[in-house]
Amino acid sequence: MAPEAARPANRRAMATILLTVVLDLVGFGLVIPLLAFYVESFGASPERVTMLMAGFSLAQFVFAPIWGQLSDRIGRRPVLVVSIGLTSLFLALFASAQSLGALFLFRVLHGVATANISTAQACMADLSTREERARAMGMIGAAFGLGFTVGPALGGGLSPDGFLLIRLLPWLEQSGFEGLAAQIGGMGLSLPIWVAAGLSAINFLLALWLLPETRWSQADAEAAAPRRLNLLAIATAMRDPRLGLMILLTFVQVFAFAMTESTFTLFAEHVHGLKAAQVGELFGIVGVVGIVVQGGLIRPLLRRYGEAPLIPAGLGLLALAVALLPAAPEGAALMAVFALMAVGQGVATPSISGLISRSAAADDQGLILGSAQSAGALARAFGPLLGGVLFQRVAFGAPFWVSAALLGGGALLSVEATARAARGAGRGPTG
Image (cartoon, rainbow, N blue to C red; front, side, top):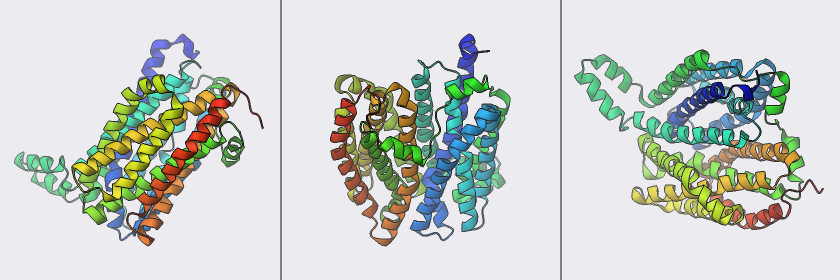
């Protein structure tokens, strides 16, 4: 049965896939605010903390195409069900680890398991026509935004002194569950990780019960699945005179932001004395503002101004916010800087993606867009490594200064990059 013949069934299938993606990302986001605190409790240096973050991203970069190609051969459903089940297992092992080496092993394996987003995207592509595909991918993006908003806030709330935990424990004690309250209170920083593992276990059961197979045939799978790329493909796309600079710009933006994101928790702990609960609130602000910008503001802005002026504006705002971050005092000022950072990111990211897609020739869409995504994945792997080195060996504020400089340079680069992309819009490769 072809996808076009089963619209209601397709909508139900899409809803199920989006639910599994949201639950997956909420579980991932739960761990974000406390990760640095948890790893440091094993005696890890800041450099080791960011190495662990980089290992997770590198595992995702390597295994995303592997999961995707496997789903082309054996089907989407078994790949998603198995990867979600492994996510729950590796989170539980991460929460129960007794050594720093075990933490590294299970965090990397967790990255392997959660590298299934390409399979979820392939599912959505299977269920949509070519004309509907951009909207389907946008729905995956919205699921990302929801997961990254709810997850960090929930993770911070369940951390020691978190707003949820300080209400839950007295309620359990008053209800006669003193033993359970003591057990939960004794989990410390591992509690949100256990909750994430439990959420993934629920997600596994839902996927096992509800998730349909969407790959109709091998021919349909090959037509629907995004092209899966490697380093050679990135190098090939970089030589495109129309969009090579835009792919470089994607790498610079993601690298700089990943460096900031991976070291902020360390900075918040060592400089401001913040706890995981407070860090979770700050990351929650980024998620909420990001949803407002990307869900409501970016479309009218793009209609009025187009991508070309919004890209340097977004990168400039992001550079300003990151530069202010190490000097911002705790409280309202720090929250305002985080909100400004979310606005800059929310304006720049979809504008860059949109201009790349609009300017690439029809037969180059897979190559160019996939190369940009791969460049971003590499940046997420290596940005934290430099951030950790700068934080530990230079100064606590050094990752933010370097990140702001890179983003400022990116804003300047974007003027020429957007001009080239606009000049080459709609044409095939010229060299």
